[in-house]
Image (tube, rainbow, N blue to C red; front, side, top):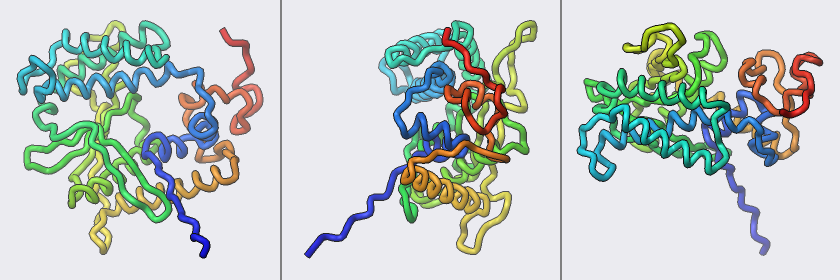
Length: 303
């Protein structure tokens, strides 16, 4: 008797697959699937530096490093040391800042965050780099939560660090970030048995100090966007409406990825799916992208 074929469901990451595809499927196809390496690897430097140094800060406060007493807050000197460690590791993997200015800005942002958020946030942290996974009908979804924290009432919060500016409130980028957090909430429920109360999106670019302006001593309003999972009500099965919206949208995205992979076609985005200018400006395949008018990105010789 012939054995029936076993259907192997693909595994998708919330950030590197689902969110990246939604941002630009053509870019995702070239760099996420076809094996091309982006020349602009320096663009990921800031985000990776932020995440890795802040993870060290959380571990520092928890006393997980030799010689560090639990409950001790990192100093500026500690940030310098952690920054150097991460910088060396990233350069060994050929990820470098676009310029020394970018590196200094990242270090300044980290010190500012540590100074104004650390005293309140670090004592609330329950876990960091918290890995989640759940089976969907046609794929397996994975995600990593930057920080799990507990508020003063003991309610669970998800903190997610974004190495960008705060998007406009009406933008598709912010909507997708909210849906990403809502799907994290569902994955967390599968693992922990209950939903977190809220998510805190922290846009660390908002902490960059500007020339001629005084140092930042309090949290800028645009730095944080809070996602209340229960703000839109609850479905009859107990699922928060916002969570259902995120799951439905990302299920469709996963189906689109599977279709594109099967056909080997990664069409350029159109209409309301067009990414923002920052995404296109650093894209290595922008020169001949049909999503833009001819001449918007003229071909130039590499420097």
